[in-house]
Length: 430
Image (cartoon, rainbow, N blue to C red):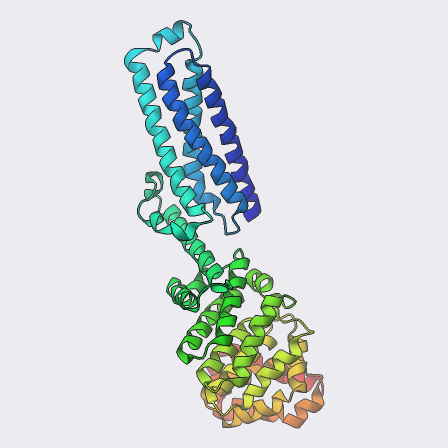
């Protein structure tokens, strides 16, 4: 859809450039009101140059392109050029009509057209600032004024605001991933990203920006010794991965498991999980891995699952709970590889760790753990030996009939999941 919209605007711009050239030719052939036509020709030429520049910017610009927001301005410019062509063609003739087109009427027509051309130039200048590849040096100008044609349309203003934000994210991403960017600048970029609430802006059409942001953040975490800054970087990664989790297109394209960038990012998150002595940072890294659960292929799932399962035995309760919540996303019905992931969890002794966690943990751990163990049971009920050894059925009954009975009764979805898990286990003659 984005490509088609972009191509439509490019075609429209090309037509307008041809229209401007026709006006210039008509001006050169004018036999009446030559001075007025000359002034009109200069303005049209300026407009033509701006249209050509805009066409170049849009062709080369890799950021998201909004056709709806630019269309009203383009239509206004096109209509103005059409009026200019009509007036210029009128001045090519010396007949009686041209003699009638004199005096006050002619001056009024030309002055009206001059005004329209000036408005068009004003609007085009605004668009050029926005689409300028060197946007970072001029983006302050964009907030100083807004084309009058857009002021009374809240939807367009909202679109422009989003486009400006996405443009800034693109600039910040480039600086963050840049090899020559000073560390101080990169820290400022992360602070700016947190203020922009980047997680709510990224979408499936901002693949390159997402990859650059994540790669830059991963490198910052790797080389950072300041724990506060490292936590800030991780919090931004959590925002970005959460956006990817809710947008499958963004998730699959920006975090392809066979891409170098994705590998660097994930390995850095694993390093934090395994090596960090700060449980709050481990929680953030685990949360990000959980958000990317749908992106891991069967070939790479073993390492991921192994890292998460190992955290079920963490001495920090919040880390173990987060690991359960992350593993849930690998085993849930929405994950295409849930059966493969669930079997891998069993192979890495997840059931034993889960049973201990559920018996000794608090209410939150019991609820989250019960959901996970039910997912595993539904997905891998044929692994009866492992289930029997872990006493899964006994545990489920203990949690639902005694301590967890109230929780289950108050949660119909959990009650249904428990019933489904028990049915699957009994079906395979557990």
